[in-house]
Length: 321
Ligand code: HEM
Image (cartoon, rainbow, N blue to C red; front, side, top):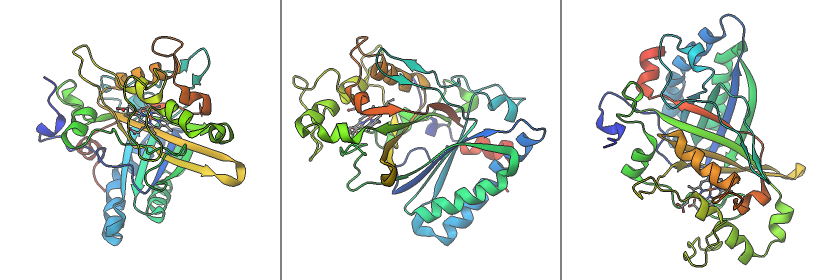
């Protein structure tokens, strides 16, 4: 019943469906309040494909890509004549008995991925130039692929991500919002880890926190996997018992000299509600109080939600400089 957007030949999506990458920059910005800030932003977004084309021609092995997300408050400022995407709303903060997921500002989000840091950096710098004084920085994280796709807590991250058609089905809007088919929603959160406490936990205990083995990444059997493990709380089903998937592209980041170690969580979905249900399970608990034990070692310090329009929507609305 929910035809994936790829069947609708007109909407070319942004490159949402791909792996986390070797290097990434996650940039959140606010749009300034001054008079022509939105004109400048529209122009800069319209010019982005040309910068990407040029860099990818020069650095073909870099596989450089950039996804643009637009926040709920920014949408009517940038596209006053267009209805907002059906499911777009600001990130809803969560207040669990023990752990909180704060909402932080964000009008624009850029997810820049490549096989090399310099390509990400060059794109970010050129983009920043074109945005001029129309934006203010909110947050910027430089993520890296860590060893064999490990998260900062040392477990392989991304294993159960949907692949191929399933990833398309999970992330791209189809006929439920025809004006925005080929679009997607994204939630990002920056987490900081208490690595001293985490490393003090024996590996067998860490495995109970995640719900998989650490060395070889094998899922625990259902009868031994704790109900407050990260895996148990993030497997969710719809009313027909079908598993509801999101596509994650998390990467670790850190500043060892400052003892700062983190995970940048980024999840794409065709429906924000799927990611929100997972967050509710993690922070409030399923059932309430049975919260995700990973949060005892991880603090969410940012949280924002964005709509990721189809590439073809951006080209039609903003041109392609
Ligand atoms: C699975 C790490 C935050 C949703 C996993 C796995 C790891 C992991 C190691 C197991 C391997 C895999 O299937 O990828 C982390 C870390 C986080 C974090 C370090 C931040 C501290 C989140 C958040 C969500 C989420 C905020 C949802 C809003 C999921 C889902 C799975 C998963 C859906 C796959 C479950 C399954 O099908 O088995 N995560 N995660 N994660 N995580 Fe997270």
